[in-house]
Amino acid sequence: MSFSDLIYPFEWIVAWILYGWHSLFDTIGIPPDSGAAWVLSIIGLVVVMRAAMIPLFVKQIHASRRMQLIQPEMQKIQAKYKGKTDPDSRQAMTQETMDLYKRTGTNPFSSCLPILLQSPFFFGLFRVLNGLQKIASGETQPIGPISRTLAGQAEQSTLFGAQLSDKFIGADSLTTQIVTIVLIVLMSASTFTTQRQLMMKNMPASALDNPFAKQQKMLLYLMPLFFAISGVNFPIGVLLYWLTTNVWSMCQQFYVIRKMPAPGSPAEKAMQERRAKRGKPVEEFRVKGLDKPEEEARKASGQRQQPSRNKKKKTSAAGKPKPATASSPVQESKPQTDN
Image 1 (tube, rainbow, N blue to C red):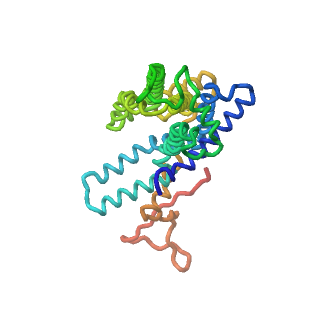
Image 2: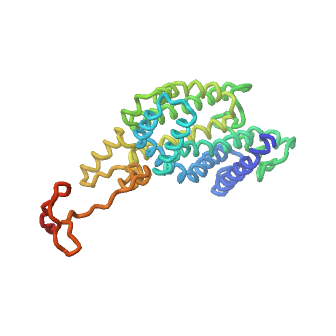
Image 3: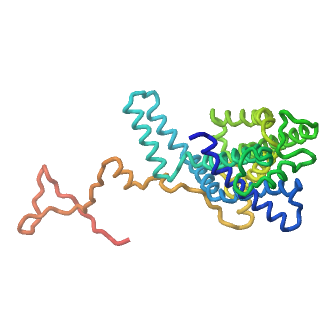
């Protein structure tokens, strides 16, 4: 099965969403062959996709907060097996790590789900916009409801004078190149702002002093270069989609940082101060299962608690106290009182 076969269902879904929004804007009076109708349809595509992924995004936030809180336990496990490279030790370390994830309900891959789910739709939109000219000319078959007529309208639609299907590479006009550069700059700025507020406001100081945080900081400044290299190869419509989803992410993250900050971060301290000023209780985010109950820990280690008994005087079969001997002295018993 080729990549085209795998991505075709997402092309079909993207085509139907674009068609739905385009029909809505046509109904309310926006000319169907205008650039505004198709630009708003692409923005509508982002709204539909990101709104559908809000439950996954909430899970991602909770997973991220759990991952930060279990880091001390993770470090203990790593320190326990540090320098041990034999297979048994590696297997034991993996098992303890998986038990920690299971006990705390943490999934380290949850933070990747929104990005992974967006990728097929991103490529689907790229292929739809890239194939408009061929659909309009009859070289290829329509995609879903995107007929030859609609494909021709979309292919000729413009954003500030630049066609949505045009790219920087091979552009025939300076307008297309300028619009592309402006979109790339805005994409870079929105991504930089999103990542910077995440690192500065929503990460505890301990999380900033590690190799992973340093890599994130490096990526923060390399992203504009990545956008500049890759952005010139995408149609303007795809760049518009990319910019819109970046703006959505930036606003969504701003809300999350304010309402559900990471434990130990400056944003959490600011939220607690706001709640204290309003007279509201300050609640701390806790991970269920992070601190095992004592009894559960004993069971996990295979130990059993011995039942406690009150010390009583040993009596003989006749019910009289045994005489004190050197080996078994009589202990004084104090009367117990109910507290």
